[in-house]
Image (cartoon, rainbow, N blue to C red; front, side):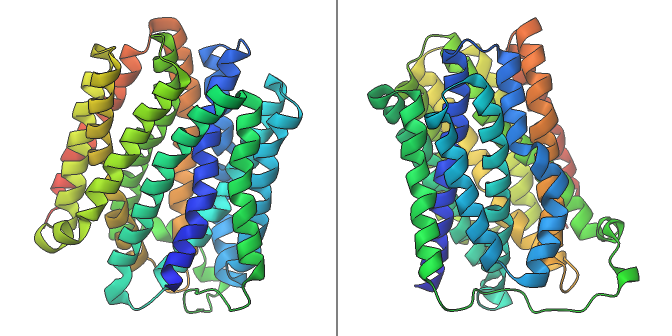
Length: 377
């Protein structure tokens, strides 16, 4: 039951974050922003987390996850409330930044808790449960946002989303028991070099494929609202399509215990990237909601099965006492791609259309599938 408690907290924070990303993109377009401006706003969700993730991981390794998580849920509440109070494009720049920082702390803190919950023999399954929780909130976030926009308007939808981290904040504040954390391990100053993590082959290879998969995952959140709006889809329809992506991640993660017993971890990652790359090749060739829903489901199956495998590999390969720091490095790499790639993608979309962006992403993922296949032993 205790792991369900932590999964519930993560779902509440992630739902608000995912819903706010979609709502920010659609609200900015409704206010007259260009695709390039939307790209900048999406990048701001990751800009400061890109710079702060490693130090955040070290902080959580040192003091534990409770206080950082309390601050994180408070930041999510504030970030989601600002566009309701001040419904202007300028406000979205501040809210995107605050939401990104808040969820960065939730992401690193929850991964630290889940990795430390139970023994090493349960670690891969615990991360599989966390991934299933991400799928639930990832599907609920766009649905809540889409129907809230249609029923209440863009600004009020943000207030609805703010209620979820507010509930998480209250629930965590009332908990008196200490939160799980990795065993503390004293690290001498000379041993605490960031580059040492990249010298561990298992970590280095995991960082590479993790960054590629995260790019495929997060660019979907940026590209789908813009592409859907460009072909005239309603916000609720866009929300349903994006929810289908998340439902697919939920379905495939239910099968993860069987996959982990029957297939090698790197083979799972290679198949994941190949399927996702194929989906992005098809995406700009269709414009019907039904076909986009089917391709989104395909993308969800591909991208959804790799995350629990990657997190288990990352935690197992990390030096003692530096698990949070390793997660912080991964988060920095993910946020770097989220910061720069949406801006570049927005500029390319404005200049050349969206097809080249989809196909460049497809080529990257298919190349990553080849790299992951080389790691299969």
